[in-house]
Length: 244
Image (tube, rainbow, N blue to C red; front, side):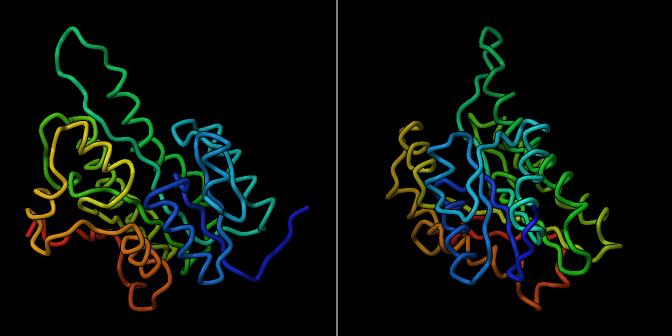
């Protein structure tokens, strides 16, 4: 049985930690009902969402099933935050496998496409919102990150194309491009690359990493603010001035 709630509903992918978990908490604090997914049951439950789901966003069938579960639970879907993502090095050595490339593209680009595609029929005209969490590496290149850069650039292109597709319905689609955010994934990546967190922070104009809740606040603004209702197809950078 579908239970219709007066409270708006947001679906957050990759809600188990980092930016995704901060987004879940932000929307819940503002009386939204939140559905979130992760690739494992433990991860899904750790999101603290009102509806925790296991979903591989790179699998179209799983995404369709997940959207159906959200509608069955809440009877509505008002916004989508495409946050799930993978990072990591991918070798250009001709003797290496292509597994990392396919895994990153599958999660970071196929995922937002599938989630948006299957959520759009249910998003309300005029107030429906899609937010894609890209990266500053969706705007510039980086050594040893061809798959990640390609996927995040692709998210920016997806954002712009979707904005055209749904403009007649007055649904907005925007991308957020964070710099270094203080998350487990970022810290692991820094260690993997043998970099210094202190030196990276110094390379940013404001001298520090971004906090996950700062990205969550920006996502909430783009979804709920009347001032943001005219913004679509945009790429908003939150990086402490790293790209200035």
